[in-house]
Amino acid sequence: MPAPSRKIASHAQTIGELLSRPYSYAVPDYQRDFAWESDQVDEFWDDIRRATLAGREEYFLGAMVVSSEGDGGRKSI
Image (cartoon, rainbow, N blue to C red):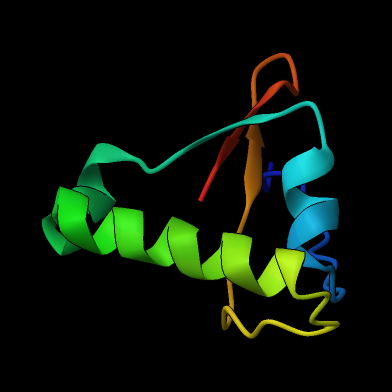
C-alpha cells in the first residue's frame, strides 16, 4: 500500500509573524554542515532587529521549508 501523501502549502509571512508563533525552531543535524559561526548569527539577528525597529514592511529571507515534529510545538527548518 502506498504511503499517504502530504500536501505542501506555501505562503508569505513577515518575520514577525514567523517568530511570534509559539514554536521552537531547530536546524536538523544533516543541515548543520552549512552552519554559520556565532558572529554571522549575531549579525543576522541584529539586522532583523534593526529592520523591525525601523518599521520595514519587507525583509527577504528567501525560501524556508518548515516542518512540524511530534506535538507541533517544534519546527524543523
